[in-house]
Amino acid sequence: NALLGGDGREREVLAAEVARRGLKNVGFADLLPREQFNEGLALGDIHLLRWLGYATCGALDLDSQRLKGAFTMDEVRALRGAWEELTRIRIDLHLQAGRPQDVLTHDEQLRIARSRGYQEDHPEGPAEHFMQDLFRETTAVATIARRFSARHRPRRLTKQIKDFVVAHRAD
Image 1: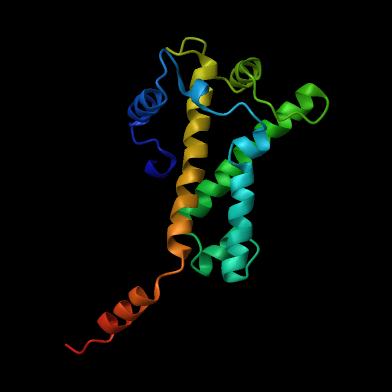
Image 2: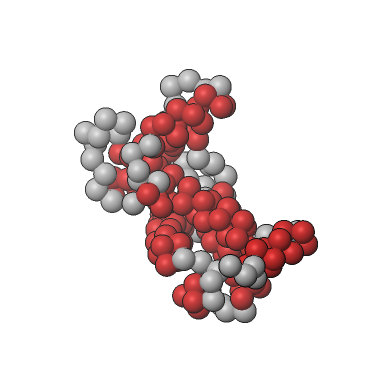
């Protein structure tokens, strides 16, 4: 699914980000934020997108926002899937700690990866494989946020006039 970044370019994206940051010998897990899971890994972005969708079209849920043009069907599916996956991970972190816990440490990555059946024999190991999947989910949310912003950015008056004139030309 190209929307989720599963287009075979994951290593290319990783290499570009590693080069941009001037890092050596790192994987996807090293590039993702370790801060608060809720804010650092797309849950906050999904929440914000829902509120912005509400502000732009007056509908609270993603499906109604899609019907009013705020999102495409693929975007709604990706947002819903990311929200469900990220929420499951967050709840898992809370239950494991026995209290609110939003930090996805390497030990937690490994524990969650193993509990989800990620294989130890994967070339980069189960935690790295899990984080690659998580990276695709969070990248999809960021891409959708950029698209949403571009679609809903106010146009300049000159652009509006040009679009009006071009649309109403007689052939």
